[in-house]
Image (cartoon, rainbow, N blue to C red; front, top):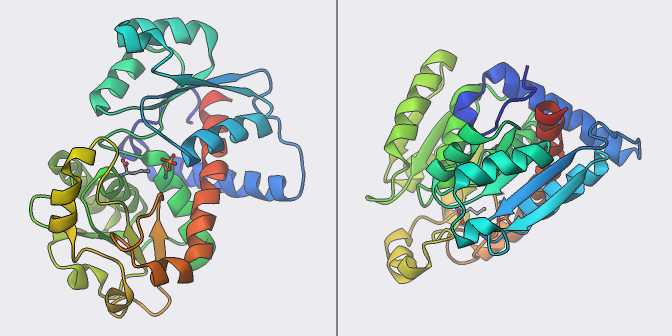
Length: 309
Ligand code: CP
Ligand code: NVA
């Protein structure tokens, strides 16, 4: 179903396709833990273009490709001719002649879309200013492991900046029938176009997509509390303003009182203790948060196997 496709946005996938990825991710995770070889992508090469920093994405894609029997190439924009102005459409056509798939982390989402338009191999979004779908696939896998396979009807509350993580979680929840509520300050709401699309997706699955400025309202009876940094990559110049504006949009003990007793606390990492999450809450939920980080590996292996297999 997914063979040869791109992964640009979860909005482009059906719920069945997301299910397929999650099911294979769980299978590959079990195989890896049992030491069973799974060289599904033997002889294949993934290019990984990074225009921003990364710890998890880089290491999980590279290791994942190795475990699948293939090879991954780290390509920094500082070294590629893109950095000297070679057009994205030429880069996409050239790399398509060598590689079996490309993962890109960049700033403008449109750049990724343009690359995918000219590439003839699967293109995977490794984060843009707008979306981070690979993270959300790992998140859904983690939620299933902790709260059970049936995602439908669960409530996820996102607290903080309405950024690429908020946008992607909104898509993931709407597709899988989970209620999504984001609490952000005024002026920090998620992307309008994403909200519109996610509401349409949610209508089909009976889920709720809601925005508020009140963290307590969002957190009420939530099964999952999720947050991400107040200052994303590329926004460093706004650091002080953002810290002022987002103060109060923190996951802490006080906010947890409103959530379900069994509520999960999630963070895509890297975390800034004392900003979007209190240090004690982070440490109390650290096992879960690092399971989430680990699941990047398993979810992305499934994505690569299905797209590039
Ligand atoms: N969560 C995430 O994408 O981490 P990196 O920026 O380290 O890849
Ligand atoms: N919103 C963050 C996510 C990092 C994984 C950023 O874009 O920097």
